[in-house]
Image (cartoon, rainbow, N blue to C red; front, top):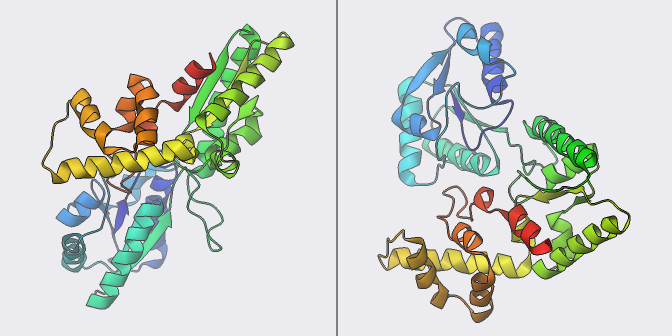
Length: 328
């Protein structure tokens, strides 16, 4: 069986195609591949379709995960383990392949341990597939999808750089995908040579504050303007704010405050009510920082945490807009 977990990733479909080809050539008579629909939700519910050569052929080298779909994929609780075990036993699976990123592969390892302890004959395999490039070790040279994502985004960044150099009057502040690590930003920077590429890990090592980052960006814009170049490109990693010490502390406190509200039975979704309820629960420095930020950033910082890792929704935080406004 095969399950698509986590976020969309180029190459996930090729895993299903490869498994189909393998079973045709090596699986023997009667071997078949089951694809579980809607990620782990389909695995827990036993909802699967048989995948043959005809079914997977149109998806070869295609992006996304629309062949099977995905959901908010976590395998954490005892109930999850029991449902996965029941499905594998009922379907008579000799192997279960889960395609996903770091969180999904961690869940895969724990599921494999559960199966071993329970004597489940299904072998569990994790395939590293993430555009963020944050799943690596001595045994993994690169994750599926990272190279494709880097080249696709580099093409877009290159087009914007050409436009900036042509119009000679625009600065493009571009927020790159990639979640917390800056690998995707750095990969695109190597291919496109932007004027500025912020690398979160470097900013963290230098202990730079938000004010420091804005100051350096403003200095760079001013230096180019002095040469008559009123244009440029800035690449900003999606997880930049997690590398700014005071903002990272604020995010941690907001997460703790949101959990406290849930325990107290406060389920209000009104943004202003959430803000006023959280503010007294923060330390004075964090409360002052939150109050100083633009309203749209405050709302984005207080969004519901991700189910997979209980972190802020970095993809929803307009860091590029914030930096552009502060530099201006």
